[in-house]
Image (cartoon, rainbow, N blue to C red; front, side):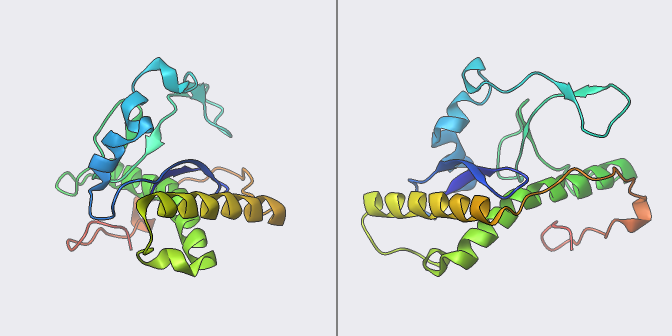
Length: 173
């Protein structure tokens, strides 16, 4: 399953239809989202200023992904580990926080529907319907519970507060 989620851990786009053995990058390229990402068809909003930012500087809307996805204008991913500077470490740290939205959504979905923890032994068409039903129920439950993120005060991150990256897999600890 390839999905897009918002800050409230609600799935906004889901692509189910490839086997788990396929790479995320190849699944992305085969998806409708991957095919129209850099076109006007997707309807990505124009650049805008960030909430709580009084500078007036505008930033483009983009999707956040991991290293397995291609780098595109509308797709942001972390700097490679081999290029560590304080600015890049801070960027990677904050970007990993943005990626947590979708990871959190997947975690909640998996915890709620235990069957999704492993392979679902059905025909491909049935699995696609099951996954889509999980996503719909997940979103329904989240909306019904009313657990949503609220914009808070902005904060600065001092470089010493960022945990070091480990050589084993590059993820923040």
